[in-house]
Length: 326
Image 1 (cartoon, rainbow, N blue to C red):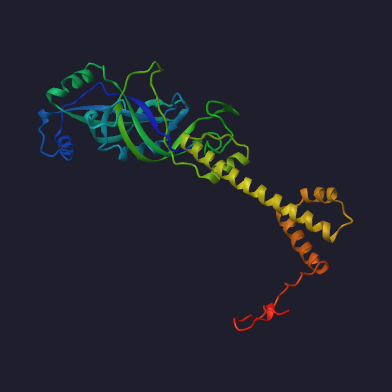
Image 2: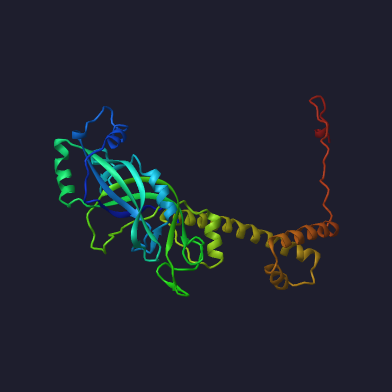
């Protein structure tokens, strides 16, 4: 829980590059300050993500892929997710969700993937990058996006709230998370290839932070819950405030109990202090206040308030020496 969770997914650059079309050049020039020619840009394809289950037992829904299709247009490509201007290398100018005929996901669904077309200016500084892409050295990329919810494939509830665990099987059904409600796309990066299976998926996931009420509800219902670092800080801060309030409450209760015991000795002298202390321990603060108010009224009738004594000042004037007369 979330401060915030980031999702990154390794994808693979398309090994084929096609000649820049007039339509593509038009889309590219929508991002350039001057009109570029076909000879000034290098265009390549990239597979960003798909709807298959990844190594973390999560997957995008087809609906999420279509949401990403709109969000990734215009996003810049960098290296190793380092958000500096000098790392900007390429830019996506078109995205599309496509079905790969005859291919199925691990769940038996039709396979869909999000592909993009990106461009790099043909400059002396970019020659090595273009050569690395053509030779297959720069192949894997990683995307960053934000999802609003991860739903459990078993029960359909949020994985933060249900008791199912990703990767486990329940009644013959494998539990995995479905990434839903994509609301932002950040960037895509060229990254090193980790030693993983074919998809090479590495990711984190960024979602909306859970409200404190949701966190407490999950705790009270004894459900498994995953908290982000930011959400852990929020929960710790909340607990610290509760501790301070509890300390103030203990002090107030002790003061109230002492007053009830003092008044009890006046209005009910036949009841021992030990007995009254035992009774007071089981009372709530509201009950202690009721006893205190009732005891105060009875104490006032038993011990009426003593009127203030008033001493009238003698009128002493400079002309009168009466105080000194013998």
